[in-house]
Image 1: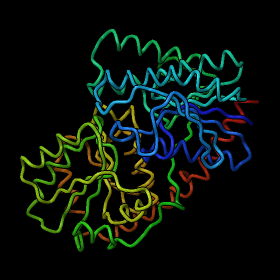
Image 2 (image 1 turned 90 degrees about the vertical axis):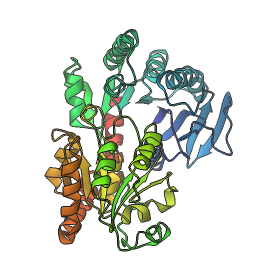
Image 3 (image 1 turned 120 degrees about the vertical axis):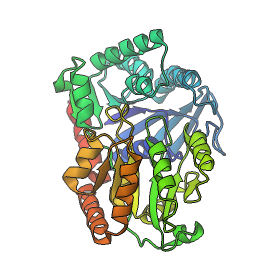
Image 4 (image 1 turned 180 degrees about the horizontal axis):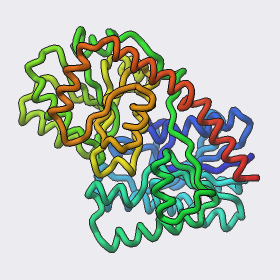
Amino acid sequence: MRILFLAHHYAPEEVSGAVLATELATDLVRRGHQVSFVTCAPNYPNGEVLTGYKNSLLVKEMLDGVHVTRIWSYISPRKTFWPRILQYGTFSASAFYGALLAGKPDLIFSYSPPLPLGVTAWLLSRIWQVPWILRVEDLFPEAAVVAGVLRNRLAVTFFNFLERFLYQKATHISLISEGFRQNLTSKSISNEKLSVEPVWADPEEIQPLPKENEFRQQHVLENCFVVLYAGNLGHNTALEDVIVAAEQLQTHNDIRFIIVGEGVKKTSLIELAQEKHLKNVIFLPYQPRHSLSEMMASADVSLVTLNKHAFHTSLPSKTFAIMASARPILAVTPPESEIARLVSQSFCGVNVPPGQPETLSKTILDLNVKHDLLEKMGRNGRIQLETNYSRKHCVGLYENLIIQVFS
């Protein structure tokens, strides 16, 4: 089958969405499908085109059997709403001609965000008369509204209209969680055109490794209790709670907080830690992909955080990387969130509601002396990952969906 993917990110970017899209495309090629991928010049996380690439009108390359077409779009390091909308809008427009040059497929598979890319996919599906699967990985504009990024009333109205229009026009909608399904059915989207294909992690790539390793040595963490956060430092996080908890625990010399990643909140979080004169918090940039297993293994517990406004519009993919590393999850999320449910049902960690840093610090102190419990929760997460959220299992779900929609 000839499949055309439309997505804002693709390898070599190490953003989770790019990694998953790359793995899905390459695995479908290995399963005998012909895959074309239209994307832009890689520019994550700093909004600067990566070395070796140019923001050109059209560049074609072959990556692991995938025909990749990169097209021009506006690219800016500014992460505010309107520059990002301009970037998404120009990419979505350019993706139209990039897709036409890539050739007619049997099926179109597009990702949201960016939401305007759905218009491109819909137009192409009408021109070619082929089915279109819309993959929803963030609920936009709802996620932007609750994060306080989108406040203009006219813009909200427009994007709400566009969201419902695309949901109605898509042949099928693939979702990351049951919570997303409930959200769309509440908007009168037929449950028959919805399915859940979960985010995954690759248990072959992310392996459980010894805790005392080179990453710990490099950052002087030997014999420390390490609380790790690795991922996007975005609007939907509750990392302020983590900084306050670190302040409450700064007299415990064996506890360290490691925050790895980039995002719009990074500067404010660093400033908050500096104001509190915290020496138990270390900020690091994104680490190379090849050192991911070692970094994840260095943790005693790994954080997943969502604030009270964002828990129903997002499901961080870092959750599954933590499970693959056989480390317990310390979730700072509302108790009704998808992550809290997963942690509770799989017994692979603990959940603390956001806005309760005192409870968070007490939970960390409690876990610090329960090494057997931590090991058990880590094992449970790894087993759950291998069973229900592995790369092989989830790619199989996607392939079955694609064949079913095409048929």
